[in-house]
Amino acid sequence: MSDDLDRISLTLPSSMVDRLDGIVDEWEYASRSEAIRDSLRDFFATYEWESGDEQHHHGTIVIVHDHHVSGIADELQTVQHEMADIITSVQHIHLSHDTCMETLVVEGAGNRITELANRLRAIGGVQQVKVVVVDE
Image 1 (cartoon, rainbow, N blue to C red):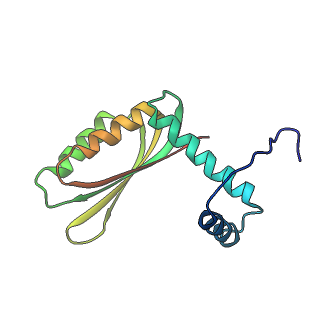
Image 2: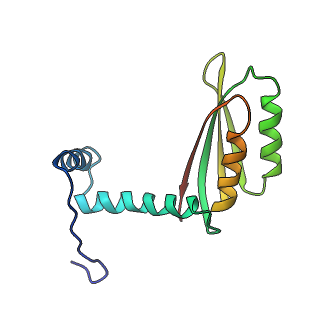
Image 3: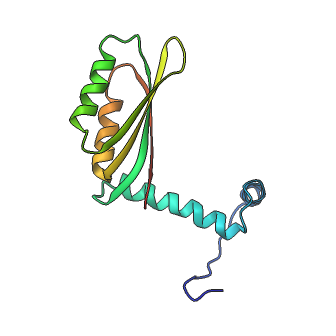
C-alpha cells in the first residue's frame, strides 16, 4: 500500500455490501476502495458547496418547468442575466408539449451557486431544480 494512503475499516449491512459489489462489477472499478474513494469525492464536494462556502466550483443546475405558466421564461431569463457572472452556458430542451428543461453550466463560489439554485426554485412553475457541483 502506498505511503500516501491510510487504511480504514467500514461496517456496513450486508445488503449495502452486496449493492456495492454489484456496482463495482458493473462499473468496472478496480476495487471497492476505488468506488468508495469516488463516492467520497462527490460527498466532499456536495458538503463544501452546501455549507455555503466561497470555494470555486464547477457544475450544472438542471431546471424542469411548465412552459405554459405565464411569464416563466422571462423570470428565468431575468435571474440568469442577474447572475451571469457564474453561468457559462445555458441549454433549453423541450421535454414534452407542457414541460421544458434548462441546463445551466455554472462556475463560481459555492454560496453563489446555492443562491442561484434557490432563486430558480422560487419561480412559480418551476417543478424541479437539481444541482450537481464538482471540484477541480
